Image (tube, rainbow, N blue to C red; front, top):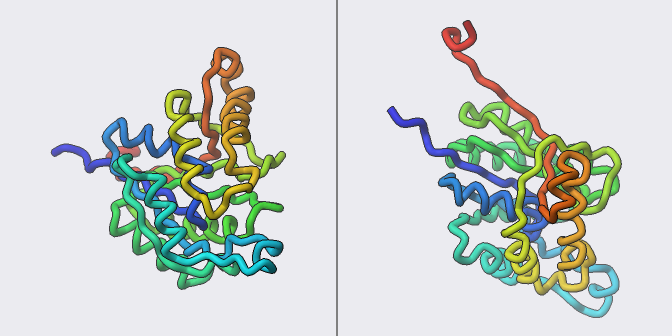
Length: 232
């Protein structure tokens, strides 16, 4: 009997998070035949700076959802929006159960989510990471968890996995540019995206980084399942 098809699920807090953390990795998985789904937990409508809000700027669910859809147009990657409100997520029963239900339904084999070391990063990222890892422990098909690099540089992120995205980097920059409602945020710009992809390789693959290869970096959690016979 053929093994079940691999299904990679990225569970992220906001509409642009997966593009920032793992767009190239998701595309690479698709190239290798895996099914790929991005689960966006919140609507992202509160992604407006205080200065813009004072000027009357506001966002809608439809606007941010359309930007996400445009980011993955033609990629073969599915998009699922859970509709929670951004800015006040907590890893409670509702959030954990909502994520768990989707991981089970999709038959998730690889989970990609935020770092568990959020620090000054967005509080929603930490809540989603905690809830997703909690949920994954009860999903029998899920054997690997990858934690993406936080958007801002952090000293307590120690990657153990690099994914070469050199040829996909222009597509990643384009995908991020679809989030026009977030235009002007430094971490969404092409210059920073290219810098971060270059910097990611210097610790684990300096020779390849020096040759111009570009990467996305992850920490890992592994849930290895053995039957009694396999463990002998």
